[in-house]
Image (cartoon, rainbow, N blue to C red; front, side, top):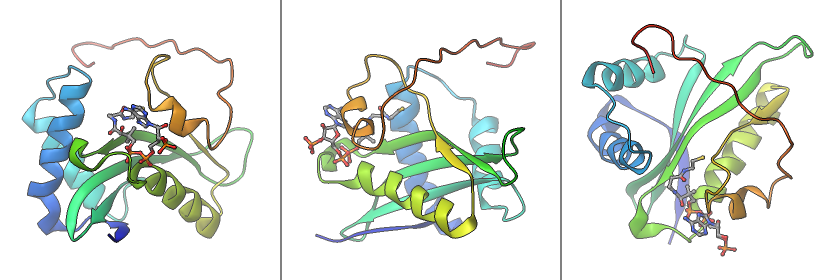
Length: 150
Ligand SMILES: CC(C)(COP(=O)(O)OP(=O)(O)OC[C@H]1O[C@@H](n2cnc3c(N)ncnc32)[C@H](O)[C@@H]1OP(=O)(O)O)[C@@H](O)C(=O)NCCC(=O)NCCS
């Protein structure tokens, strides 16, 4: 049983789309095709502050993280936001989710990013995994949809 974490390649699109579908279904969202296409193309662009890392388990693409880099007013190097995390339900509980987060921590250390952070729903069972890394703080989120965007 081997797990490798790596950047996406163009030929990963079909496998990633299966996971993406699982993820958006998990959240009850129906993401328009044009948004999925845009997300994939942006993530492949090395100039975009945006990336997808894949967990390959026994040579199968089995999970992904999607991260966004942005500047911050309290730091001098990029901040990394972990926006999406998903593991194929068939292989959960075998350390892939943890490996995907550890991979981003390693990337942050290598690239001198200032911070890694993420949000989740209060009742998400994934918090048992997140609590292994750090304690949740007491910030809450306010979110306004602009125009027809979600
Ligand atoms: C969260 C997720 C990525 C974790 O992937 P995973 O490969 O199963 O995670 P790991 O095997 O590394 O870690 C599992 C640990 O996390 C906890 N955990 C994670 N997800 C859990 C779940 N759905 N139910 C119960 N426990 C869960 C367990 O405590 C487990 O710890 P243990 O092995 O010591 O018992 C996966 O459950 C998933 O894709 N969930 C649906 C999407 C989601 O919630 N994404 C995160 C959005 S913020």
